[in-house]
Length: 529
Ligand code: KIV
Ligand code: ZN
Image (tube, rainbow, N blue to C red; front, side):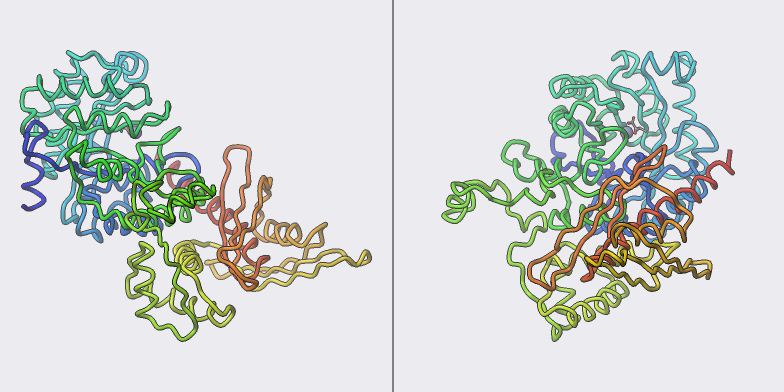
């Protein structure tokens, strides 16, 4: 069956046992404070999502900024195995921007939306019910002039009167929408309620059998995954979700959680997705690195502890039979359990193979740069473990995200009372500038951070700094994480190196680069308005 034919199998078709995964990491996820990505970073994440085989990648909101438009356009050009989608409000300029941004996609979708609930109608839109329907119909019709694949969403659908919701949805279907999305915009619903709503829509809507019904749940009450699964039980055949559950406020339904629930409890749901779940761990780590937001240890599916068994009783059970305490196999989500060692004699093929087992599909160019870093690391340390390789790949992923890079760094520290810790840091900027600063402070890391702040002219408050070893042994790689705050936002940064101080410096500079990239993007957004 081709992708186009798949789209014409409607929600009400009892034979439709497949749930489409619409991933909005790069739109709803990326628009949340502290999760912004550059165009290049979005493309890297889009490739990871394509490798996961998500059905639809919502790549952004084309009308939001020229940067967003360009990122969607590039993703649309490069991605072949997932539909690439752009969000648009129901107005001409948004829809035209989306249509142009996806025009070169092998398979492109426009997702247009308007709010329908009484609160939004009265206080946000100040529009009558009829006016909203007219806008919805015009928006869907215009979107259909760009692509046959048009999704329509009733924002705040959960708090919309059922009879009105039915009327809007039927009008959008008549206008040509092929997917109808019912968002729980404010994360307010419960599993029983949303299942009942989807059953109602599947049963009562004229034309339900010709479209796909979709759920889009936010996690304000911690129910996004449960509500999405309940919507599926009620007839939804697309779920909108984001890796690591990122998104507005408390986030969206987590892609890895909803997919693994369907896979692990196939006996209960009787439904499937086309996702290559082995890529989850790598995609989750990549996102955490690109956005600088670490995954909590206890996060379902992709957290560090998700497959760790610490207590004696659990370890005993797992050694006797893994199924005593494991409902999923770690390798099914890309968590490696064998931790093979590579060394300086290992070749490119072995590295590529290992990266694949860790959930990273490397292109030839990526393999080349990771291989160079791997050889340097293998010279510096005897054995290279899976966690080292993962840190190298992720380091490459953030490596090209300047504008600033470290040219050189020297520190002196010790217990001599007459000599204070001192750091000499030299940075280069992508515009060609180079600058050096010498700082003296109460500790070597303080001195490094101070020198970097001085060169980049970025004063900020350091809230948290931590270094941990990526793997075992005296020559282990160090991974540093930094959290800083400004008056408006807090930012995370990450850096890895066999040198602890250098890892810390990279993490600190990672934060500054994120802030400066965001500032440039902000300027281009305000220049538009
Ligand atoms: O939460 C929401 O309602 C949305 C829509 C734009 C689909 O993100
Ligand atoms: Zn949303």
